[in-house]
Image (cartoon, rainbow, N blue to C red; front, side, top):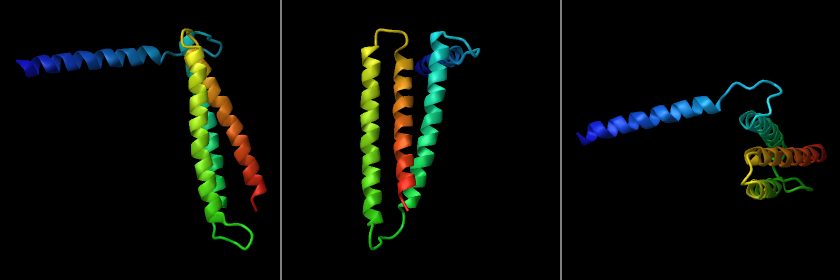
Length: 136
C-alpha cells in the first residue's frame, strides 16, 4: 500500500516537472521580449561566450605545455595561469551573483545575471587572446 502511494506520488511529481519544463522551453520569435524569451536568449549568448573562452583557454594551456627553457619556466607558468583562471571564475561568479541580488525582486534578474556572465566571459576571452598572441 505504501509503495503504491509512493509510486503514484512519484509519477505525479515527474509528470508535473516534465510539463513545467515543456512550458519553460517555449518557442520564441526573434523579437520576443517576454521574460522567458529574453532569459533564453541571454543564456544562449552566455553559452556561446563560454565555449569561446574554453577554446582560447585550451589554446593557451597547450602553448605553455612545454618543458622549461632557458628563459621561461613553462610548467610554473601553466600552474600560475590555471590558478588565475580558477580565481577569475570565482570573481566572475561572485560579481554576477551580485547583479542577480541587486535585481532579485525584478523579473529580469536572470537576464541581468546571464548578461553579466556573458560580458565578463567575453572580457576574459580577450585577455586570454592577448596571452596567446604574446606567448612564443
